[in-house]
Amino acid sequence: MELQIRNLSKTYSNGVQALKNVNLTIPSGMFGLLGPNGAGKSSLMRTIATLQEADSGSITLGELDVLKEKKEVRKVLGYLPQEFGVYPKVTAEELLDHMAVLKGILHKKERHAVVAALLQQTNLYEVRKKNLGGYSGGMKQRFGIAQALLGDPKIIIVDEPTAGLDPAERNRFHNLLCEIGEDRVVILSTHIVSDVSDLCSQMAIINKGEVLLTGDPLRVMNDL
Ligand code: ADP
Ligand code: ADP
Image (cartoon, rainbow, N blue to C red; front, side, top):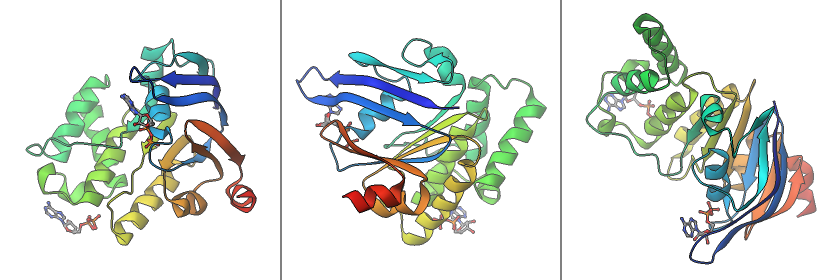
């Protein structure tokens, strides 16, 4: 599976040109999108996640036309947004179960098995019956990954996930990302260089809506 972005542009109604003729080929594995605040990372992530429109250009995921076949794309895509809010008064287990219903996993037994496996994978099984409001930042982010993994998506988009996490939480989160990146496309957007150099096999640098460099992190960092 490969994501191809061709000549993608977006100008917001306030006149800000957030994406300028973006071209990117994103293969399976961990792909880092590195850029400062305001570079256009979230705009690109939201567009890929079918949550906002582009003005021109195309995105394909395998055979799918991402900008047109939104419903199909949503079935194979998991998304952890930058501002990931959780409902404080439900438990991880309850919310995942509910989200699994929305994802179309209707059979109760199957759903329970899927939810339990995700809670285990993200190391939240022991706290599954606690309200999300009591979770630490790291736990909330891991819950975000659990919900993004529902339905076993082929592509996962993670927008600025480690902001505000302490080093131990960050480490744990990185390990989880590596695990899920083994057999899918994982796009990690970040302004932290080491997030990309530690984790990603391919990367792009984006600034002011333009892709400046792309390739293997070691090479790209050398070219800076
Ligand atoms: P990043 O995620 O790299 O911080 P964004 O994609 O959030 O970058 O923002 C890129 C530019 O677009 C910024 O100048 C930002 O202020 C602007 N922008 C983002 N979202 C909107 C919006 N909904 N309406 C208007 N301008 C926006
Ligand atoms: P972090 O990723 O923030 O380090 P951990 O999963 O390591 O979080 O949590 C540390 C310990 O605290 C775990 O053993 C967990 O069971 C417990 N814990 C954290 N938050 C809660 C909570 N809201 N309710 C009960 N136990 C919690």
